[in-house]
Amino acid sequence: MTDSIWHEVAPVAAVTEGCPFKALVSGVELGLYKIDGELFAIDDICTHAHALLTEGYLDGYIIECPLHGGCFDVRNGRGQGLPITADVRSYPVKIEGDAIYVAIDRS
Amino acid sequence: MSVDYDVLIVGAGHGGASTAVALRQQRFEGTIGLLGEEPELPYDRPPLSKDYLNGDKPWESMVFHSAKGWADRQVDLMLGCQVLEVDASAHRVHTKEGRSINYGKLVWAAGGMPRRLACDGHDLAGVHTLRARADADRMIAELPSVHEAVVVGGGYIGLEAAAALRTLGKKVTLLEALDRVLARVTAEPVSRFYEAQHRSHGVDIRLDAKVDRIIGKNERVTGVRLADGEEIPAQMVIVGIGISPVVAPLITAGAAGSNGVRVDAQCRTSLPDILALGDCAEHRNSHGDDDWIRIESVQNATDQGTIAAQAIMGEPCTYDAVPWFWSDQYDLKLQTVGLSHGHDQYIVRGFPETGSFAIVYLRSGVVIALDCVNAIRDYAQGRMLVRRRARPDPALLADPAVELRALA
Image 1 (cartoon, rainbow over the protein chains, first blue to last red):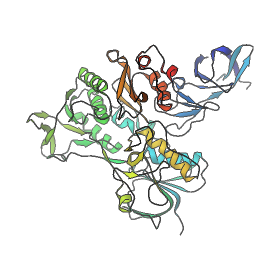
Image 2 (cartoon, rainbow over the protein chains, first blue to last red):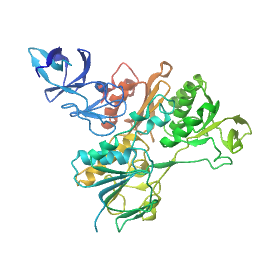
Image 3 (cartoon, chains in turn orange, green):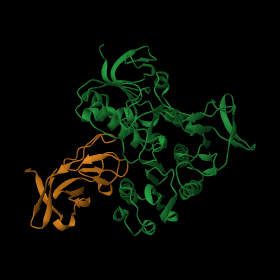
């Protein structure tokens, strides 16, 4: 974690329960998800084809890519079976004051 | 009796591969054999009629896992093998190569074979069906000497192949026997939209067109003669008229089924320890009027693969996923949710002339399906309407300013 920087991404109020939130942070396309009050952040670009997961279908902790239906767990970025064969990165999230921060690796 | 595999999967396409992956994902610890007729590693099939055909997508990006990837998951691959006979009571299959394989559970995911024309000339060189990579590669090898092509069939495969060849600069004539393309699967506005789009790209679409024979010289196609006598010159004919399910060994072994092999909501056939799924499996879909149907889609194969894995693990499961499907032609992305068969009303949402619109299908006021063209948000949100069997105000459905999500 010493190689990561916390980036302010959005006001807490901007990310609502169950609604995928798209953000571009330090050149990284991210999707923020609030589920049961908890926040998660993963890469927004699907590993299968160039599509944005935040435009897809959220069911519990699973986001489904709108292009070919590939599913990821937003808690850890893990692909949930074919057609996904590679996970997306997942990032630590914290709240400080009334802002949401995501930790992005310096590299 | 000792089994060679606790689970033997016959068919290494989307359904078979998905079953193997799902079993390991669910921590199945038994042995798994994945047997397929094609010599290639299991791969993503849809690009064959789209960007693989027009040269945009490299083969390497279509393979699901490398040989090592399958070995890491402890799935034994048997490629280039064909099962000819199933001995259900002995729990054994016999292959064309002369091998006998004993199984604990058999998962039949053998898909379908493309239907061929029966007319004179149907087997001339240059006449192709498109299902496997080998088919696409044969077509690609001939393309340099093709200036004119005829596509027989105005379904998804035919339209996609027409788009790919037109994109490569070939002169393309598409023959559809019915009065509109995609007649069996979409409402008229979608058919007319695609006809107009293909025509604007220079494809000659002929409706109500029937093939009399394929004509050739020196065993190679030179053209297609229509029922009315017109002859269309062509150096390649692509036949996209559907598939017949590959299930003969199961039916011979006594499995129930008239349109493919019949399965229940856990993908079980009427034979003990034999499951089936994907393009070859007839099932009652809760989103399709509860009729027995066969769905030919990646979604159906993949999701039934997950169900089959759960059933094998003894977990309670029911196949009730909302069907969805996509088709890529030129820069048009068609995405469908649900099954529109049996709709009694449809709403046009947006304006087809803009190239982005959706059709919402209803039955007795309930949203049962959507066809979305370049309308990803409507597609993703429309899923919710179908899943929840929503009954929204049709006026709001027709208003593109109202998000579908708000009507769920």
